[in-house]
Image (tube, rainbow over all chains, first blue to last red; front, side, top):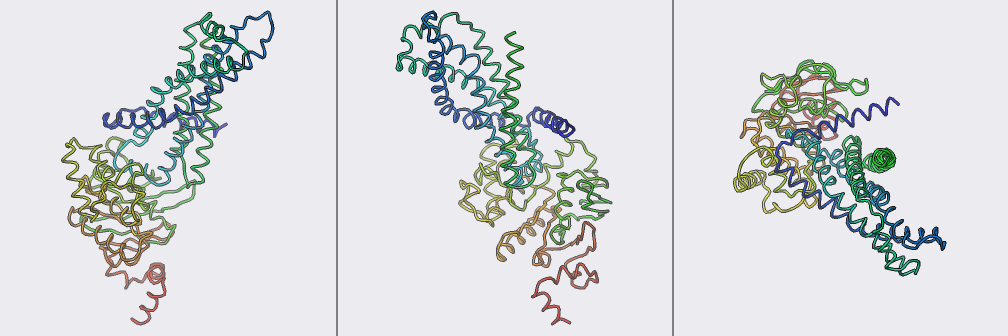
Length: 247
Length: 251
C-alpha cells in the first residue's frame, strides 16, 4: 500500500513537471505534429482492421441472440450501433492503444533514460519531462477522438457487410436500425471516454518509461507494466465514467 | 571555478561519497580518476545536479549550486556542456539536428546563423560531411566528437566528460583527449573529466583527483602522480604489466 501511494505521489509530481510552461512553444508544436503522425496516424490501420471485425462479430452475435420472430431484424443494426458507440469503440480502441501506443511510449522514454539522453536534456537546462511527454499527451488528446470516430464508422460498416453477406439482416433493415432512436449524446459519451483513456495511456506509460533504472531488461519490464497498468486503469475508469455519464 | 566542500552522497543508506572537498580550476583540464565503482560518476553527476547530495556544498564561482531553485539552476545549466559515457546523442535526430538542438532551444538565432554555428562546431571536432547521418550510422569515436560538438555549441563555461575514452581504440582516445584539452584552453572552460585511463591522466591531467571507495585519497598534477607515496594510488597507476615493468626499470 505504501509503495502504491509512493508511486501515485511520484506520478503526480511528474505530471506537475510535465504540465509546466513550455520553454519554447514552437519546438513543442513541431514535436506535437511529429507525435500526431507517430502515435496517431500510424494507429489508423490497426484500429480500422480491428473495428471492422469487431462490428462484424457484434452483428452476427446480435443476430444469433435475437433469432426470434417477435424481434424485428432492424434491432440487429440498432444493437450493433449502440454496442459500438457505447462500449466497443472507445474501450476496445483504448485497450488496443494501451498495447500499441503505451508500450511504444514507455520503451522510447525508458531507452532514452538508460542511454542518458534524458540526463543530456537536463544538463542543457531543458525540462525533459515536459519536452518528452507533453507533446505526446496533446497528440493523443487531439487525435484519439478521430480514431474513435473512425472505429465507430468502420465498425458499423463491418457489421452491415457481415450481416448482409451472412443473410441475417437485409441492408434496408440494418440501415433503418442504425438510425432508429439514435441519441447523439452517445457520441459525446464515447469521445469523453476516449479523451480520459488517451490521457491515462500516455501519462501512465510515460511515467513507467521515465522512472526506468537499469538497462534493456528494465525497459522491457517498464513497457509491460505500462500496458498492464494502462489497461487496468482504462477498465476501472470505464466503470466510473459510465456511472457518471449515463446515470 | 567549481568548488566542492564536504560532499556526502549515499544510495539507500549505503555511502557512496564521503566528505569530498576539492576545487576545479578554470581554464584547466581537471581529472577525477579511480577504479570502477570508486564513485567518480556519482561525484560528476552530483556536481552537475543530476544527483541530489545528502550534505555539503557545490559552488559554481560564487553561486551555491545545490541550494539554487530549478530556474536558477537552469540558467547555470545553459553554461554547461556534458559528454556522456555513451555519448547520449538523440537517436531520432541527425548529427546536424543534435548539435543544433541547444541552439534551437535557447537562442533566437536564425536558421542560417544556427547552421553556421553547427558547421563550425562540427569542423572544430573534425566531423565533415556527416551532417545528415543518424547517430546509429556513426562510429564510437565519431559519436563522441559529435557529442563534444553539441556540448560546445553554446560556448559553455563548464565542460564535463564522463569516461570520454571508454570503448575507443588508443589512437582515437588520444585524439579525443587532445580535443578536450584544446577546447578547454580555447574557450577558457572549467573542464572536469572522469577517467580510469592512465594515458589520459599523463597527457591532459593538469589537475588530478584520485578517488578510492568514495573518498578523496590524493590530488595533484600528472607530473606529481608518479612520485606519490599514496599506496592505493600507486596500485592503481601501476596496475598494468607494462607500467609495472617500467617502474621496475626506473628503480
